[in-house]
Image (cartoon, rainbow, N blue to C red; front, side, top):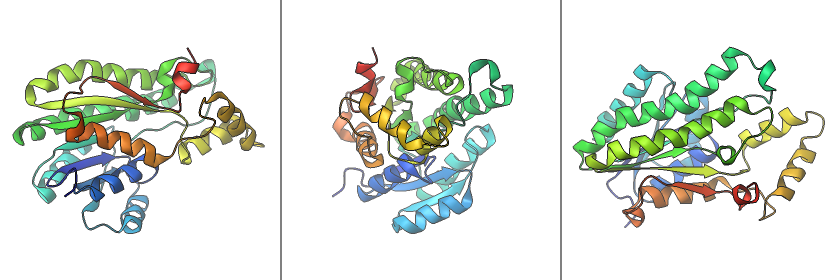
Length: 257
């Protein structure tokens, strides 16, 4: 018996990193999982590598309403409904000071990170209500704990994700749906590698070493550790948890205060 037997889950940004680790864990716990992303080759490779018949993929741009409606409809078509949605899709782009940032840069980050999260709620909520309830997890970041230079668009977007949750969870509770946020810290994956390279193209390891020294646990987190937090929030282990921001960050958000 798994913790998620007979459940159907959607994981956006499921082609790598936290999304792929989450899809793998939810499927191991009995859920049927649809992973969503913009790059078919990456999604296909992830499904093949995870090698679980209960994981499939759908190509969509989470920042577009028609695509969000389509991936939810596809989950219903393939698996009979939706019980869980993990709005993990997010982008960082390069570090760039506020006054040098382009409007396109700002818009793209906000559209994927914030609008994409909102759209996942908008279209999954009615399907969850049909099933008698469900759980939604939005992914924010330790960046929502404060401000960081050259991070304006990303930091603003991750603050906004928490704001979306704080209103949306009140709308969702009468429908039997719990909405929560997880804010990861520095995680060993491609996004952090990109940040390190953007901050110091000639010596990204120095950036990593500096980051590790700022983390009370003195290490980066693992994708699988975030997936475990997501599993908690979408399972019956957290039936009295709604409207929270769960920081899984090795203690760094408290050390920044």
